[in-house]
Figure 1 (cartoon, rainbow, N blue to C red):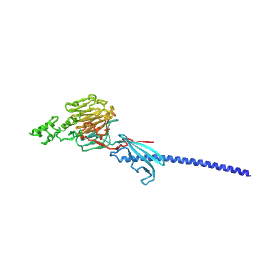
Figure 2: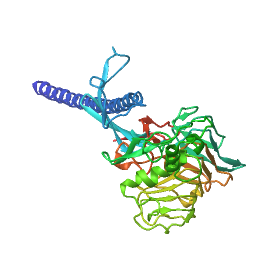
Figure 3: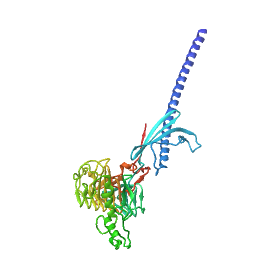
Figure 4: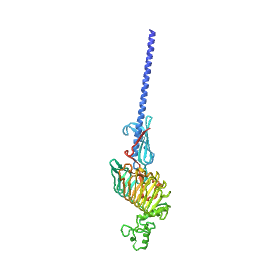
Length: 453
């Protein structure tokens, strides 16, 4: 009997021990799953905290649109938690979010979320306009007309980056795509060439009196009120007559802005040793036709007293990759202007600037800067970066609906003009730069790119 009782005790003890082992195993497995679930939940929550941090940084930067900001950017001190609801809600987790530029037209946000020691990181990239100063992508003192073309499934678009600014109305059609600001009925000061060389600064920064073309302080005004300065305003005064003759640079019988234009380049700007004075090596006394290799290598600027025609070329038309300027008293006509990244082609005309091309053949990879006293006309396709401003009108028309080939793309310049060494050679002092402030491009223009790390 005693042996049976001892055997039952052993079996009972073994059974209880087995139950304990099983219970402990079950408890261990349950605890492990609970811990794994909590880790997973914390990591998942940390990811959403990181996303929330990125969105909060986006909203913070969105509020800075229109400002000039410095990079990188961080969230203000204290704005680093995510709560369940409102400012009084329970803290879900913390985040650290920063933003920095990736390129001139893209920035990225990096946000790391933290929950109970678990972390997750997300990055998101947005399109933007970086903060720097350049000329207006398109501007004019007169009216602006933008026309794309379409027929059936064939379309040729005008695609332009703002700001677009006009002293009158801006008209367009359904085949025009504009990203950025459109400003109508703006007030502009006409481009001014009444400047004199300042020997102290080495620049043309001293204003002349209107009518005093040669800057000798002897000049006429419109004494008889006929709207122009002519020899008649001198009357019988011999000294006044002599002053008029000296100021009538192009001897056309009237002293006006064209005389100031010629004097600005051939006299005042020429103080900088550019050889564009009359009878010098870079001065052309009559209309000229250029092809891609007819300008000597290393020539930064030429002056043409007449019209300029630049023949078609699908590669960089100037003999070298550099910054070059053409100044003309008449019209400038250029087919398919082309250059390479980092370079600038500047066209300055007292008349009109006319251009046209085919988008497929490329275009200005660097910058195209236009200063036109007359109109700026662009027909057919082509692409350019830079600044275009006309004292007259801007007319852009793709003409035919040949999809892809005749699109006209006009984008902002890629050079920072706040650095005076980047200012295109020959632009008058009051051409004006446009502060391109920070702005986030709409999702319809550049879709955000989210990544989880």
